Length: 187
Image (cartoon, rainbow, N blue to C red):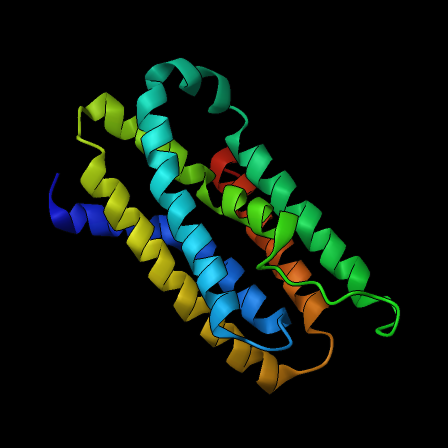
């Protein structure tokens, strides 16, 4: 498979991670090196591992997941986005600071943004492509796009201020709806 094709696939897969990273950059009170590292590392790692998992599973699991992968991504992103919207209306003195780069949020985001990479791994298995180089490229591109997205989100957060947690939640639900509509071919 040509290198340009691999980078195009990696870039396409990284778009969800990029959008979620923008949201994370918006909602974080302080954009520290550790937060950027955690999110970019996990997004890159999951984007690296999911094609390998898909490739390894081959066509066996493909029959079971192909009809539901978009619903899983939509559900995960909507759940986290809904929580963010709910928390945006809570009294700031009563709520904890929600950090999308920690705990279950980090795991849910990592899974939700990498489910498409699982399907790519399945496709590469069918094509007989060795999975290692594509997985490395996909992981690195996702990591770099996450870093870029977080910094862009931080600038947007400073510029817009206000209820950015509400905006972030709406963005996550929008990403989930986009994934759902693409797979259901609504638009």
